[in-house]
Length: 256
Image (cartoon, rainbow, N blue to C red; front, side, top):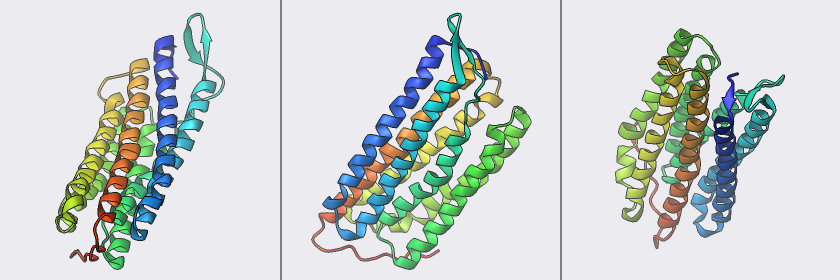
């Protein structure tokens, strides 16, 4: 636990507060939008809201833990007797990261077998990615952080390959009024997820102390807001666009 200036402590605490408020508001928006889409897209919106609900809860707990972990002494914030619980973030990711991929698959209207197959394989890869990253996140040794960080990149790169190569035909077969949004949602997923390893490796390239703490906590918060709330807005827009079609889209079967 590093000693933080008042500005550094407040920046992180305010980022947590903003993250909670944004994700909680997004949850209400997503679930209130369920009645505006066709039945086949309602599950996608339920999952979308579930992602932000889980994340909002964990940001509330993260903010509480952060507040308890520091005390103001002589104009600076120093560690208290309670340790900041960074595990909240990884518990959140274990639940929400696979669901982010599931909601994208659900809104694409693939065949039932294709939906189950791709949601399962991508979800398990996402779980493995998060699980491999945690030992490096909590380690004080740069070597350990690099090893587990690079290991977690293997399932990450496989997911990226599947999103572009594996789903390219399915995206090209989406209705014209939603095709661009589906492609954008895929790109936002990959772009926002690329921000996580940048933050993850910040402490392994010589950035240390309070500066590293600010980069990690604020950086992860920004990435979470984009990857969950921002991505969720795109999912809602896709579902609404596809619900405007006079006839339901034909289910798609994409070769593995």
